[in-house]
Image 1: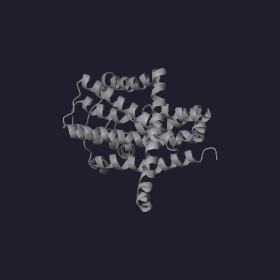
Image 2 (image 1 turned 60 degrees about the vertical axis):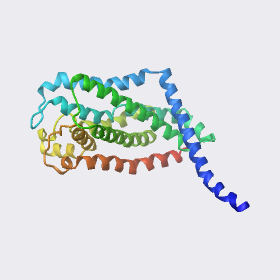
Image 3 (image 1 turned 30 degrees about the horizontal axis):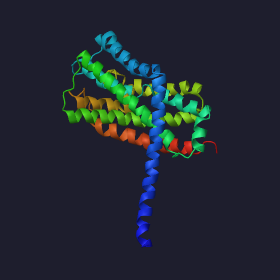
Length: 277
């Protein structure tokens, strides 16, 4: 009879740990949601700012922009802006992490009987919720402007999945950089390093219209890979160019975020584990 109880002991322990980690992570996510309820301005600004950028480029600057091979600039711009939005608002998560570090909040959490992964998982889950809302708002704005997707529902969901994958990878890059920076005032300096990733890309203009060396940088930019893949999935396909990154954009839109995650996820988790040692 004693041997019959051993399998149950070995199977319930891992489930118990996973269940506790999930519960603790949800608690950390609820903490962030409660902060939104008390101070919604930050959330609203994060949702409105990409809309303002989209409208500015579409109506103020779009008249002077041309798409190689012809076509409506809005069809080119909206998918690119969806990709660029995955870099917007990253500083809010980075500042929140540094504030928790400097106020001793993370130290208190580490001294409590909660799963060690709960703080970072809860923070990342909150950021992904905000990113999903941002995509919905921007897609709604694009539809109101007259943009339409031409593929099926499966292609549209695949495009959204690639966008969220890029955000998830950028998020862990930001969390690691935030813990390296250590102070909220340093986040602004670190954030400046992220902006070139967005603007040295094909989000607003085709690399064909750029000088050769700059066009090559834009072609190999992870943001360009996601933007091109999203344009292909939403349809009609964006302008080509014959370069390898353009022809294999969907493959790169998977490989770039996975490579970033492979580097920065363990770096962020390892740095968190080494805090206060």
